[in-house]
View (cartoon, rainbow, N blue to C red):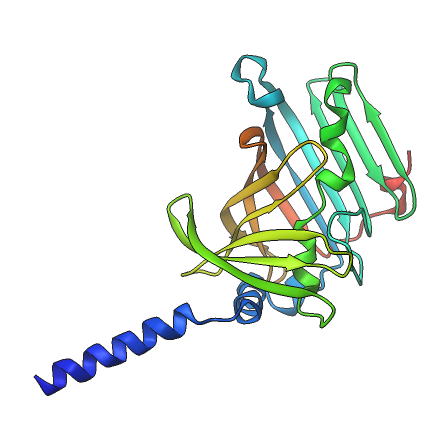
Length: 245
């Protein structure tokens, strides 16, 4: 009977330790799992694949992009979660038709929208699409971290934390309790609350870097985009010309 009590106390203690993780401990563990220093301070990321676009969540208006690509040069510092930084370009096309090209060269933005894309311009603004990357900088002392109530993402038990940057922007993350993968990010935008769900995590071939290869984007609770990244590479050179008009 005495042994049973001791075992029960040990199990309770371990469970309590997990429950008592600070938001900083959760954040650091997630960074370590994703690739440590390489993931936290990458130079570049190239993503290429396909995507389904659902305007206003409508199935009957679905568009399939057989080309969907992102080119990213990462910043070395960031104190504002929902502002364009570094360099980035997104391309979306179906067949020979370009849907959009969105480019930020580090200083200025260029946006080409097809006639089909123009009604949804507000959803493509940088403030509605930057947010995930602030995770890499949130251990800095001028950030605030808050532990929220635990919940699930796609049935996975997750820790939830909020990151408040020095500009007072709030970004919420759901982090898998078992794997410490980042499974969800969410934040307010001018077109309603936006959140993304990340899944199908894979490791890069050349470096220690974990990348979710499926990303789903939601506005006001309905799915607008379902992205399938078929190929990706980390820290490969990207010519400056990629980010010119």
